Length: 443
Image (tube, rainbow, N blue to C red):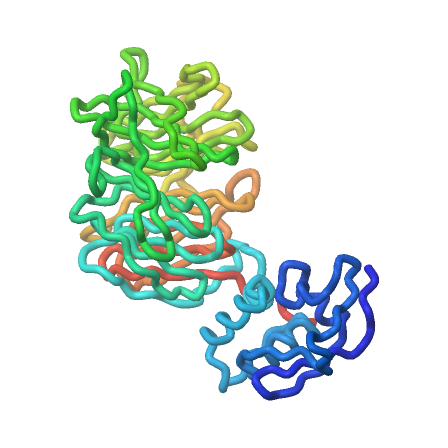
């Protein structure tokens, strides 16, 4: 690219800065500084025949960001508040530069606690979901609280005493919330809300025989081709999985439970990209028995299923509390209340669980109100929550390699990974922790 080597002068809030076009080009085409270049990466002249570009912004923050472009390192002096720097970085389109300099790529074995955020509502937390830009949303009963990457809270979403069942990020501007029937006004049990204002943008209806049906929406999942999947329960306990288009909001398909298979009021949905199937899991204790299946919507059939019906449970029973499919391993990983990991072969329909106790970390007495363990898979690492800690497993044999723990706040009721962050929601004190990976040391 033909970047000029000329010295460039800026007047920022009355202070003069000098740099080169090469340094400014490090900001990238989509930044404020990228807009100062033409299509050939030649720097344009200041307007009105001025000798410098004038920017009416904070000069102290500009100095920090300019040094970041020069060196790749982020040094924030004590006189510059971090939140102010983040806002200025967003104005210049450099927030990704700041994030990569402050925190490295996500690595479960190197995560450090960066901060904790106290609860914003009474009562226990229900669910937490990481946003695509490093923010998160937290459900507390009928309330959803949304935080941006700076962990500043946006206007909350109130469902008027309708309990939130699940939440999901459609994109950085919209969140999807599933709840009981009559979400807001109307018969929809699922709505699309603005993450910045909390306004309801769209209600997703279930239509059958050209009639809109009342339903309760449960677990949510998304596919790369902009489909929304939600478990649905009708007023007469009819169960099924609905499919909607993210862009238009229109119902595309519906998969009903039949006498041949059980879907139940599913706790977990997961879209599998390689097989183009949806994992549906109904877990203990919602039902006495667990059901896990893979649905192929192209052929309208269940292509794989497993249930623990007839399993010889003992006092040390291994009832499945969560499940996650691992396509690269051709298996489904499950976890029980003792943090034992189990593996079910996807190549064998109805195969048995191969349990492993090496993940057991709990010693001594169970807490008075333990939370059910949860699973997550990210960048080839497996994560499992248990009481007040999260275990990290790596390698083909899923060896325990590290553990994240912060005892304040009680047991972890949910956690989520996204935007190079891990968010852990504690049940008792209604607080969530933010874990991030420090950048590698400068040699």
